[in-house]
Image 1: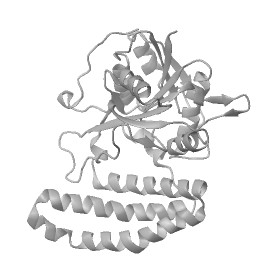
Image 2: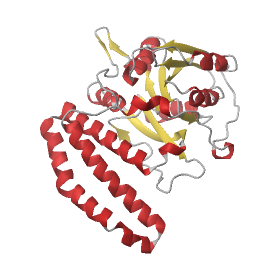
Image 3: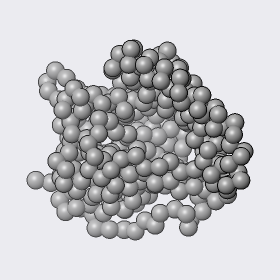
Length: 332
């Protein structure tokens, strides 16, 4: 029996980024007997990315399906992918329109699923900063070990069993459309804790994020830390109770905030030990203060919407030598 795999990509107002992602997907080297379909969901009021998708469909040996989801919000777009896949695919993978999957991305996800007996495989993200990146740009550190079992995953690099989409005749697993972000953590947490899905991390499946210049700034880092903490605190409040969220918030305010404030105030002294040390101190501790504000907001039930400026990224054109080399491989 062939293995049927769908790759979902949600996009809005970013045809250049989307084109780079689809170019990478078109050259995926897949195992024998693996049939791949790419599903692109255009999440904007008008189907503005249709032309970009159709242009790549002619050059791709995999079928590319275009769907338009006019209800604005990333959960609506992700659910449009799942609705299109229900009952049709053995596996469903997700990546983002601003990611560039490695040529063996799908093959590595499938291999990890078999190796670990996983229902969900969460893969690695590598950052490719732009030339002349901001002084403050520091790539995030890795957080998981190979084969580590998780209770959640992100949709920028993930593979999930198709059986999770329709659990039985009376229940389907979908992204929570009430959320403006953090819907992927919520989705996979429910898959793991309520439905027994085995989620495993693997370093082998890689997607690259070509960071635009405006994202390689201290301001953008603080903004992301705020939204991430807001989402996590709101998640704790909804799934683990207000008492748990308040306890974690109290610990953050009582210990992390004062320490971060002191470290930030004395950061200029660390310049004596080198610029990298000073930069790390400022970025990390300013990030902790932004995260504390986000946690307070999330505990109160407000998480904001980091996608409201989705169309502001504009064309993504990192220098060619900084982008991953994509080579053709065998296709099914």
